[in-house]
Image 1 (cartoon, rainbow, N blue to C red):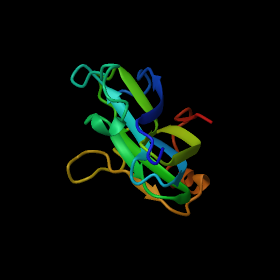
Image 2: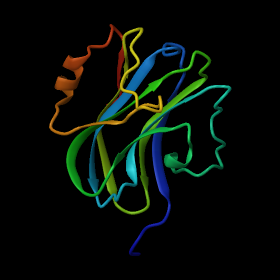
Image 3: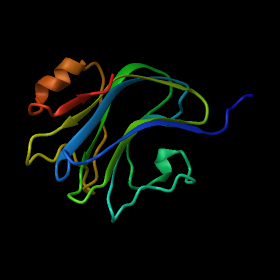
Length: 158
């Protein structure tokens, strides 16, 4: 088959109790092969104003406007990606993961969900939404040294 159909989204859902009203960053290294802009990281905080999408909805996380996305494209070596979100005070779920839509391949390593210190908002775009950060050549240790989380503020997922 020249072009596989469908989507894959590997995600984890957690309770937001320790994250409400705070900024979190989901970061990981991705390696892609022929992904053509259809792979990446996704982070979503569901709340009564933005309920979780129904299970019958498209599995492609890019189709949910409440998702914050960091897209990977083409074929590339291991590259650090991250996406940052302010968790609403009324959040009832946090979902984060990696996706691939259509053909190609994506590999994930060193995923972590980091809690920012109180009062920080992380990287934001002009529209107020999170701005995906792509770091080429940065090691995980370099990123951690830039903004150390508070005790218990990093959840290693590997």
